[in-house]
Amino acid sequence: MSDLQSLSQLNEKYQFGIVIKDPASSAEIEQAIDPIVFNYDFYSSSALLCYEQEFDFDTQSKSFLELIVNRSN
Image (cartoon, rainbow, N blue to C red; front, side, top):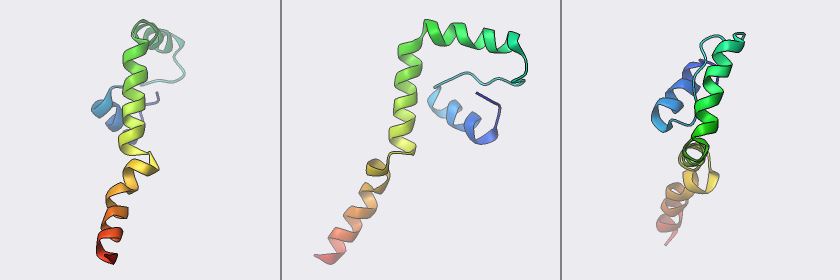
């Protein structure tokens, strides 16, 4: 992935990819591909965990919806 601050921070937390400093560098891209392919299950499950904890609407809205339901009772 590109070395964008928001992506890099998520990747530090979940380790779902490899940050590439220079996206125009084919050598750097090649170096990133091999470990991902070799450890695909790890990176795939890390990406899914990141999605579920950071972006999944059901997960993110659960505590808010519980708060609304509890206040209406």
